[in-house]
Length: 129
Image (cartoon, rainbow, N blue to C red; front, side, top):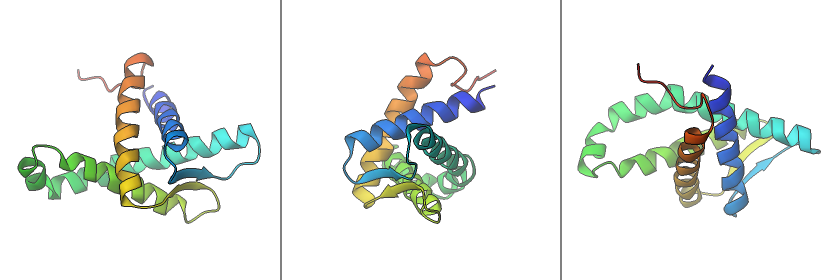
């Protein structure tokens, strides 16, 4: 039940990041419906990257998390945005990122917006039972 709301929250956060940042865009889709589908596909890829790759990166970079008092999380978020852009760049549609600094700002923005939206959207947060 939490999968679809989380994808919707990520899609909304990615959309807001593309509106606010110049170096970040989602390409593909001629009309509104296909554009929404592209955002949902990018959010799905982003969710898969965060579910599969992020734990591995976090495990191997744990000392950097400790040394930087958690600020390395911003770098990992940027790397996940860049990886999502690279994976979706293999197709004609998807996320396009201009560089690392754009990805860093996008990771920060997507993280904050998705956290705030997950507080509002029912079923979007993981339950800790």
